[in-house]
Image 1 (cartoon, rainbow, N blue to C red):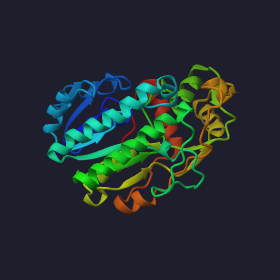
Image 2: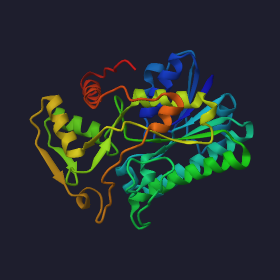
Image 3: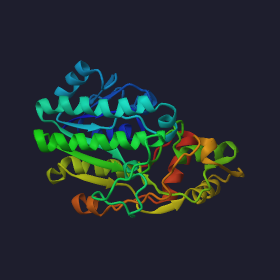
Image 4: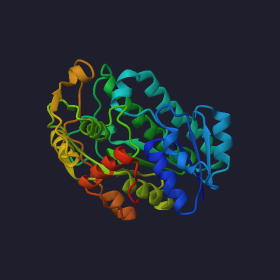
Length: 325
C-alpha cells in the first residue's frame, strides 16, 4: 500500500513509518514539526519509498495533493502532552478538532480509509475500571484547561464515526494508552523520558502529585503493530479500540524503578499538582484499559515488559540506539 501518516515526524508516527517501510509499503508523511522532530525521520530521508512534506494538515491544498496519492491515512497529527495542553489550550483545541475535520473532509472525497488516533484521556474521571470502549466518558469542568484535550479528542471520535455512518467513509478509531519508547521526548510532560533524563543527569526525579496515581505503559513497537493490523482488518471499520498495556504501576514506584535501572543516586521529590500545573488541577487516579476487544480482533498482546521499555528508553538516551521492533 501507499500510506499517509499525518504527524509522521512525531514519536509514534516515525516508528509507524519505519514499520510500514519494513513491510514494503510506500510512505508519505506530513508534519509541521510543532511537536515532532526531523531527527526522528532523518534516517529515512534517502529511502526510495519514503516521502515527506513539512506542512500543517490545515493547509488543505497541500494535504489534498498528498492524500490523493495514498490508499490509507493514519491521522496522528495532534497537540499532545499535559504541559502543552495547559500552556496552549487554544492551540490544542484548534489543532485537534480543525485538523481532524480537514483530514476527514478530504479523505471523504475519495473514500480513503482513515485511522484516527485518539487517547485514553477521553475516559476522563470515569471510575469504571478497566476502561471499556463502550464505557462512559466523564469529563471535568470546562473551567479546567486540563480537559480541553480530552474533549477535543472525543469530538474527533464523534466526527469520525459520523462520517462513517452518514457518508460511509471507512474510519477506525484507536485510543492509545501511554505509549512509550525510544524517540519520545519529555519536552511536553511525558513522564518516562523525563524521569530517565533526570536520573541519568543525577538531578532530582520529580513526581507530580503524591505518586499514588497509576498508569499502564505500552511499548511503541507493540502499538504500531496493532495500528497496522487494524488498518488491514475490514471488520475494524466503524469501531473504537483501546491499545496499550494493562499492567499497572504507580508513578512513585515508576520513579524508583527508573532510578534503579539507571544506577542513579537521584533523589525522588514530589511536586504538588497546583505548583506543577495550576490551582485545582485534576488528574485521573488510575488509567487501565480493557484490551480484550483489540486482542479478539487482531490478536494483539503486549510483548515488552515495563523493565524492557525502560531499558530501551535508557539506551536511546545514552547512545541513540533502538531495540529490534
